[in-house]
Amino acid sequence: MPNFDKILFATDFSESSGHAFTYALTLAKQFNSRLTIMHVINEPVDLRGFYVPHVSFENLEKEIEEGAQKMMSTFITQNIAGFANYETAIVTGVPWEEILRRAETDGSSCIILGTQGRSGIDHLLFGSTAERVVRKAHCPVVTVRLP
Image 1 (cartoon, one colour):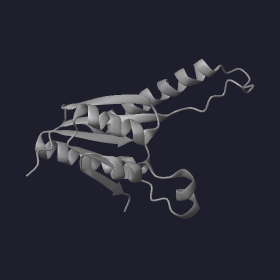
Image 2 (cartoon, helix red, strand yellow; image 1 turned 180 degrees about the horizontal axis):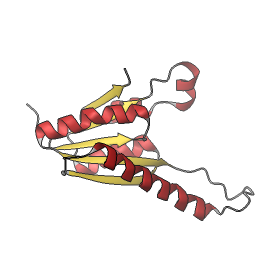
Image 3 (tube, rainbow, N blue to C red; image 1 turned 30 degrees about the horizontal axis):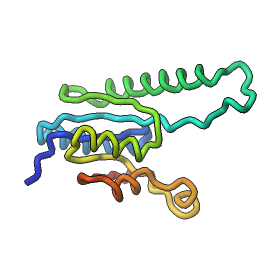
Image 4 (cartoon, one colour; image 1 turned 90 degrees about the vertical axis):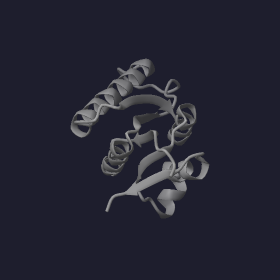
């Protein structure tokens, strides 16, 4: 049986990813795995060519990062009680690319993430982070959908 010693869990702090986290934590506890909880700040659109009153681009990036840090802190406080073998990571970029990059860098045994279940034109226009991760990952990927 494969050893799941390093599990990468990617979250967007949605209800779907919160539900998927129960699977990640259960597996991490069962296999005594190192759990990395990762959030990717979607690479912001470059607003420097537009007039945005009272907001500088640098301040906007900083505020987004601070908001993500607060959300991660809240997520950890609400979900990780009794488990200490974890680390958090917040990065900026294209979510599926950053998830795959981190999994490769860490030598992750498994990636776990929630899926929104988009379909039709919504799926066509926005694609699916989960789908791209599943297609390109070099390790098993568990996707969890809300019941």
